[in-house]
Image (cartoon, rainbow, N blue to C red; front, side, top):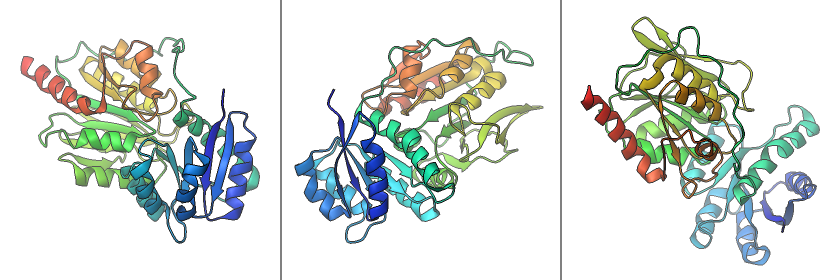
Length: 356
């Protein structure tokens, strides 16, 4: 198969070389070219014809956001990974880039741990992401799923006959997919919403703030002890798992730092197991665009508890990994384009409540 061609755009000579040398070692990838700023990168696009662009946000002369705006005018579907700093400004600019059409983002390796640690991050995280966005990674055939661990203590009851919680899991492409859903939910949405979006610390807080500002739903970054309430949503904070626990007549959130699952913290699987425990058949889950299989085993627990599951379709997913695994395992009740998911959620919640 032809190699995937990557254009690396960064003003740091050292970083361009580091990334280029690591990508060149992979037999499926080829560095099509490099550029020190956006202006030169735009001029090179038609010459090198890349399959993907790695684009630094902070650059002189023409920064990453300006470059992305221009690039999208003539290359609307070319995958672009933004490089950003793990700072509040970097997180804010990353969310701006995603809104402008970036496919995904990648936080630059820090000096902590030295060169070997940086190379490991590039090898184990960036390269699989490049291949996924270029179409090399597809979840077919679906893996065999071992039976989910028993839900204990006490399996959920037969339920109330109505949906009482909405759980959402997402990763690559998730911020825009979440915005699409939240903007189309009514202000009087009658159940609480819990969300795991794979993002680092600080990014999740800014994402919650943006979603809250753009939609009728109030969106919060989760804190331990928060009581779930209708018309509110909580996003798991970066580097923390989030679970739902029953506390007398209420359901509350807990966050913790148990080991990562599926190389993720927060993990969708961790959240969904707790949702299955607390809500059983009274739960509705939506698995959105994302790389990897996080959420698959959690959806099995939801399915076995009688809950309902929606999955985003391949055509509208940036990467059809997470929803693809759920669909291929026949756990999804419906597979829908992102534009139809909010309507399906509202119909299911309101219809079931009318039946009670």
